[in-house]
Image (cartoon, rainbow, N blue to C red; front, side, top):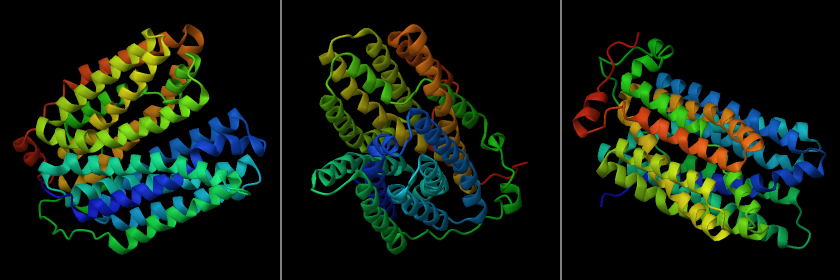
Length: 403
């Protein structure tokens, strides 16, 4: 088996440390907000602004990294901003200060995501692209597993409060930045005479990326509308009678399964093809959501929820790899920016839609609609031609006319 390139390993370690830092804070944020006078409305506003900011900037940073032909400066800027702002939440006296710090944190996430994924694509051969993105997602989920456990251990120590945990989250954030500064090297690439001029890259739209790319984005948007926050699945477990400690344990196990399946799913997409893998993942997602609508027994819901973690391994690395497969060399960052933007912006109304359906018609109706949207997205995905080595090689040629 071919080795994962060193740059991908380093980026994976940085993501592990960053998610460790983030997940030391995020599960405790509602509790902290309540202690400084912020409630559910404040939390919704903070996270809504944060998600919208990240989604918009992922599009801009993707274009920016293609135009400047540099990845590392934006990656470093993104990790620096997030790593500096996030722990300072522990010093916030009011929820409005938390809002400002989360805004800066998500600016950092928006700046780094598309250039980081483009850098992974730059250093990985075509036949290992899915595996590389799978490895990165595996490391990211690993941080999500460890972060809450570290926070729980710290809170068990005498004299340690939530604010202290937030401030201590600066340690893994600083370590992630040090790893990036010391060990990430950008590959040297020579400009091709057929590449579009840098000025043209600033105005490239989805049309320049081709018909298949537009259909993929449309399918992703429809799927995302049915892919609401996983908090609703946890709520369904709680309403079925799973105790709070059990829900917390299941959430941790869920991340373990996501971590374990990510590398395998990405590597399988290199062998089986991207479209086939995503169709399998979206079909599995639809089955899980319909099962959540029909099953009432707590034991059955627990089993379904744990199986749900496999969906992420099938889909997350494969989507990124397929986006890169479709993009010309000089438009990789731009394509990844559109991908992250579509997923991020689609997530904003998704939870609102699911919550409204749950409130008016009940949980079963909401889960059925989520599954139906996944099935509809799969039908749209059939309009995208499957990727083969010859088709991918052709798409990797520089674009001669970007409009």
